[in-house]
Amino acid sequence: MIDLAIIGGGPAGYVAAERAGARGLSVVLFEKKEMGGVCLNEGCIPTKTLLYSAKIYDNALHGDKYGICAENVGVDFGRIMMRKTKTVRKLVAAVNAKMKAHGVDVVKEAYIENRSQDSISIRCGENCYEAKNLLVCTGSETFIPSIPGIAEAGDCILTNREILALKEQPDSLVVIGGGVIGMEFASFFNSIGTKVTVVEMMPEILPGMDTEMSAQLREIYTKKGIVFHLLAKVTAIDGSAVTFEKDGQAETVTGEKILLSVGRRAVTQGFGLENIGVELFKGGIKVDETMRTNVPNVFAAGDVTGFSLLAHTASREGEVIVNNLNGQADTMSYRAIPGVVYTNPEFAGVGLTEEAAIAQNIACRVAKLPMSYAGRFVAENEGINGLCKILVSADETVLGVHMLGNPASEIIYGAGMAIEKRMTLEELKKVVFPHPTVSEIFKETIFEL
Image (cartoon, rainbow, N blue to C red):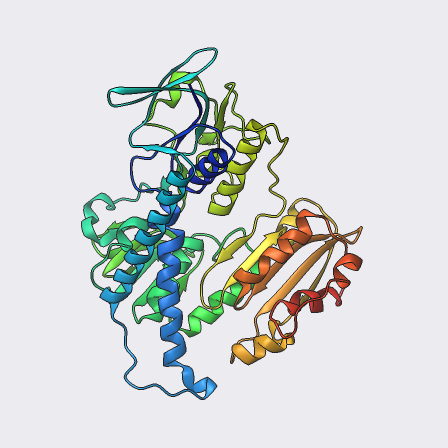
């Protein structure tokens, strides 16, 4: 009898497998594709590898701002994509090595056959596995909207999977959806010289993140050449042409390639989940604060819950499950889940936004400062002011922190710790920040409150 069977080898699955194996539990992990899931193979890692190449190109191209002059700077799209593939393979191999080191048995296909009082039966070909506990973390897939003409557009249409497999750089790209995935690809292709148009049906790009900073980021990329169409609902696709309705009028834009980036949905079918009666909620698996489903000894984590579709959320959810299986009481908190957009400049936030606080009728004070109030930021970011914004409650605890400017992604975790631990302004004012660092902007903004 296996202690824990896991279906899905993404961040929730492989982290849970590693933690469980390290604690002596017997684990079998089912993954029909490559270990690492969408994040490692078709999302987080490959896109950040591409964006880093784009950032290096931007720095070389505009190095004169810093007194560095480079000639004949160019882009080798093939080599950029080759490095992306090499990076992914290296990290997939590392995950496989971790599974082996912790005694995790990795198997391909999985189909849940039934559940008895004491175990869950999972079949892979001719082999049947009996497990005391089951963790479902089958992730999510790109949502394909029912737009007229989308099926006939053929190779013009790309999702995050196909765009990462391109062999040649497109001259032009239309991005349908201005969320995180859409903006990161827009950023990359804009930097390397592709003409980019973003069509977003909401009033602003990056819905759910701080609206003021989203608008600032859009303005930065407008100056870089990206064309944005907001409040624009796509009504048809005809080959390389995208038609949308805006202000009551129909408009059309064209692109050599069209990227669909309008959201993702949980994968809950195709592996026998219905055979054990797991309850769904809003398209994902319903779980409690310990990631338990309505079925005893069956858990779910990651994108399949349909809640917080982020790799770091999934990893933590996997840890919560293993901790409880190991007798260590633990619950999942979503109070301080960081969100990052790896554009150039980066945009990161954690906790409540102003808009969310207003919607929830939460009284708060807001302070904000340009990132240029940190000396290190001025030294390394010519021509960009950026912004840091902090929200605090009536009792002086930190509710949210949002930053636009490099390297926001490397700073935001500190704000996340403050929010998760409900630190007060007075407590934070006593923390010593290293100087000179961009992170000092956090403390500088606190003193504005």
